Amino acid sequence: MDRLRRQGLPALVVAALAPASAWGCASCGCTLSVDAATGYAATAGWRFGMQFDYIDQDELRSGTHSASPQQVVEQPSNSALRGGEIERQTINRYLTAGVAYSPNPDWYFDLRLPYVLRDHWTYGVQVQPYSPADVAPDQLSSARAAGLGDVRVVGNYQGFLPTRNLGVQLGIKLPTGEYGTAVRFDSGPLLGTPLDASLQPGTGSTDLILGAYYYTAVSQDFDLIANGQFQSALWHAQNQPGQDYRPGNSVLLAFGMRYVAHPALVPQAQVNLIRKTADQGALADTTDTAGTIAYLSPGLTLRIAPRLHLYAFVQVPVFSNLSGYQLLPRWTASVGVSYAP
Image (tube, rainbow, N blue to C red):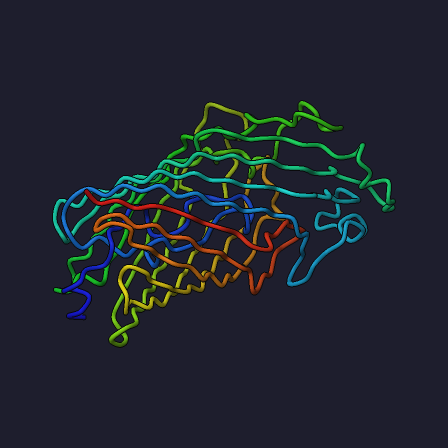
């Protein structure tokens, strides 16, 4: 641990876990632990950062296996529909600005402002019996959601140990993004109808965030970082339709190993786990939003100036167990920059 205190970890610029602060589905948010990439704040002062995440959900899955449109219709997750919605693709792009301030080495406070750009395509609900015509081009509807997402504010305390390598987190997610029925389909048979509540830029809910983290040197050249975070909706805004919509609770866990023999170039790998419960409410998809996913996430952090770092990661799902039918990305990508003046 003396080596960690002597060299210091790079400055933290965004909060501990995923840049997408709440997800209607188990797979439409990034689960990367930025702290494993850039380190936790160990000195007083300001830190700034920007991160871009690309998530292309294009593989239809159910349980632990791939699924087909025919399965969606003939083996529906909601039998009352006498069929099912055949989703084709969802492309998520998140641009997240982060500002952190540490009044002293024991405390730091983090604010994150995400901009969401999401394109979604679906063939809509098709009734039994299944026909190839159900996935014909004239059945395809599309929608685009673009705008500010839900802002997060998180406070971190790490004064338990002299080495300040053990910390806890308490924060909130605010309902700043459009939600409910704000975004509607702009083409296809669903033209003018609302996009799913889980795919709107925001959830409309105020969420509690609880977390903890620990990092340590395990040898001369390797650091180990572990963190976890729990998020749960406390209440929902009342000024739009869908006031009873409640995104499911989520638990995020991350374990990372960093090779720090050359501080200017730090290769690393993470295992990222997410467990999410089903959404609730009249606008919620209660049968197709829960699940568990594990990602393997290799990446690099590059120091391009004494206080400026770049990082890039790829995430590949290695296990998934999804309720109902959901679109899973085959890979995701995250790139970011951090600066501590």
